[in-house]
View 1 (cartoon, rainbow, N blue to C red):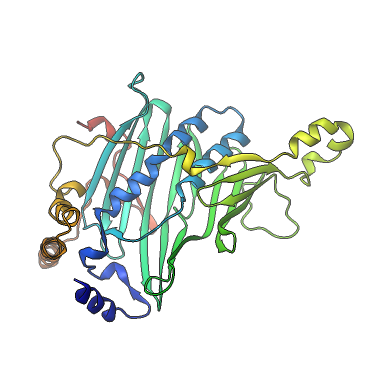
View 2 (cartoon, rainbow, N blue to C red):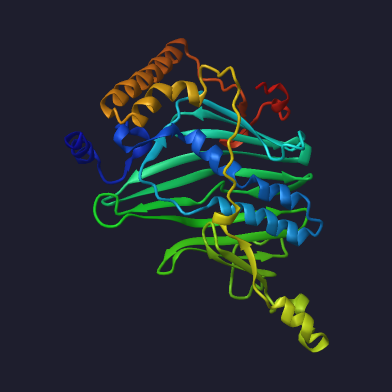
Length: 370
């Protein structure tokens, strides 16, 4: 096995696009990327439910930011998930409160394009009037001793009809020292979230620094804010680590606090205190979603079951054989479509303008059957 691994690594080239490379099972986790993204998005969904119950718009914005930063938790990335095949679907649901049947969250993800690999995502909690929709395109590049995973797409979150828009669905991920040295995994790049209805915008920078994978940002009382400059004065300051712990505090240099110290020193001291924003370890929900009893032939669970069993049994050679069968089936599908002059048509999502994707039916969850 180690000979095969060395041979595979020897074939990799600087700048190579890893989403086009068939990785041996020894490098893989026993589940699909769709399953991993679904688990990440649902693991902190309780925070969005909590945000929906907040009346104050600034605190509600912080509630959505709390969910977003919590999803960027610390990663180990010892192995990667399977690259989803075109048309692969992952559906599940989770009931947050056994005493409340209406507090159920439904999720559907579908691989809508193969190259570049793009998946659509829709999450609904109709009882709490929350939905999340978007699409994510992944690009993974190999460098001398690191892998850079870049994400494109967008995400829209609706909390009680209030819209929060993210022009980038998630930050990028850097994996350093994959071949030599101590492995380091870090989220990088910017998080931008805007709510036009409350006229608030959050800009957050994620970076790898000496104190760890930091998360530093600001919330501005202007939805038009596009970037930070030395003359800008934010309303709120955010500081901490990806996934947490992270804090927030009022920026007392903001014009709204002018003269507060003279008028009410006790109120000024209270406003100057740091407050916890999030701590991923303490808020992560260990949830066990339920899945449709009758799995679709193109569900992540059905497609990858033969490979999954082999990886769990540590039979990597047989796992590679089963994986190749799936990949050969994918090639045959594309060849058949090409011969007919047709293209793949997703089931749950539809292409819109500017190479974007949207859910076909916002009420898709009504047909969900256990």
